[in-house]
Image 1 (cartoon, helix red, strand yellow):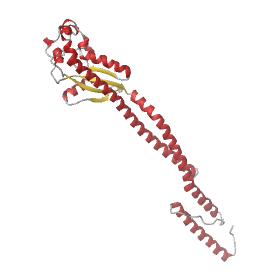
Image 2 (cartoon, one colour):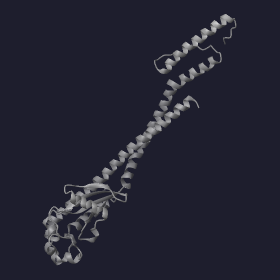
Image 3 (cartoon, rainbow, N blue to C red):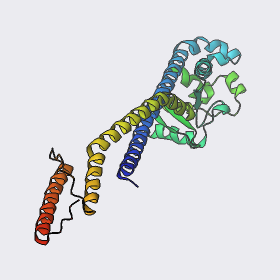
Image 4 (cartoon, rainbow, N blue to C red):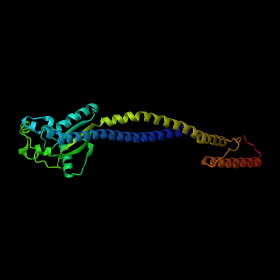
Length: 296
């Protein structure tokens, strides 16, 4: 195995490891950016849901209070309006899924799962906590969650004193026990879930053209480095090796190396020049004494 082959092999391995590490770092950065991107869209969905809920609680629900006593009107319920509005956003961003969950909901469909209940209790225990992000227990989705707090008198009209709950609403949700709400109390949480495959695909799409450029740069560096190593190191070492091998076989026809520079190979060439001259002088003296001229 020649020196050139060994050095080129070492160069290829080094560049492969370096390129791989750079690729991993860049891809991780793209993945993180993609996750932040989808979470920012999820946050916009939560902002929209909060705005719709506030508008319904302050303007629409009080306006329909009298009609709600005669018949159940889902259009008067803020949660219903929020779900309708977010459904439109889900059509535009199909990878986003919104839901509101409560430990003790009016609508059984909004019953929080076990892990959602843990997050809601976390909001209850830490009233100043504004949001929480993470990965679902299944490991398949990112989520963004915010607490839902009682911030309007209209909420307490249905969920404060049980006796004040409209009979039409009680008849619609017969087993509801969502009462005793107080202003500022955390009663539920908003969730937006995003499949982890979405930011992964976004990162892959961004990384592919960059990966091609990284490979081209690595190949260019490898070729340039191989040429420079061949010129600066390999050829000079091969010349020294060839001369040393010839001298070991008795040849003295080689002149001095042009040992310019101050690197280790130049130092080796100067040392080799001195050794060759010393050997040549020793052979001359031996030939003069013996009269046996063996110089080739």
